[in-house]
Length: 205
Image (tube, rainbow, N blue to C red; front, side, top):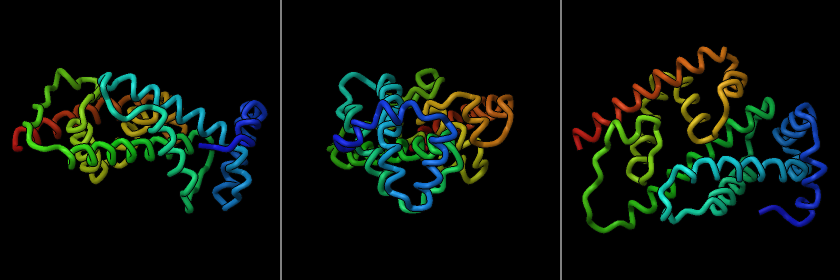
C-alpha cells in the first residue's frame, strides 16, 4: 500500500503525459526511488484495473480478493531491483508478468493445502476463451505457457499481456514492436496451442 503522501500526489501524477510517465519509469529503472514514489498512484490504479478485470472472470467464492492481489503485486513491483522499463506500455507488460506470478503462487499454495478430492477435468468448451476459473486450471495454463515460452517466446508474451495484463492489441503490438495483425495472429495460434497442450496433459494425468 502506498503512503498518505503518495495518495496526495495521485491527482497530480494522473495528469502527467505519457512522455513524463516514461521519463519517471526510466529514472526508476536507474534506481531513483523518488521516481517510483511519484509513479505510485499510477501504478496502484493500473494494478487495481488489472485485478478487477481478472477477478471478474473468477468464481464468486474465490478467496483471493482484488485488494490483496493488488497489494501483493504492488509490493513485488516496488521491490524489483533490476527493472528496465522502456516506456509506459512496457511497464504494464511487466506488471502482467508480476500479476501472473502472484496468481500462480496463490493457486499453488491452495493446492498444497488441499487434502484429497479429485481434480476437475478440463473441457475445451469451458476454456475456449482461456477464462479459467479454478486453481488447477490456472496452474495448467501456467505450465502450458512455460512450455509455449520454450517454443515461441513472443506468443507466450502475447497471452500473458492479454490474459493477465488486460492490454489491448495495439498496446501489445507497441510493447513487442510488431504489427497489430501479428498480435492477433499470435493470440489465435497461441490459444489453439495452449488448449491442445492443456487437454493433452489432462488426458495423461
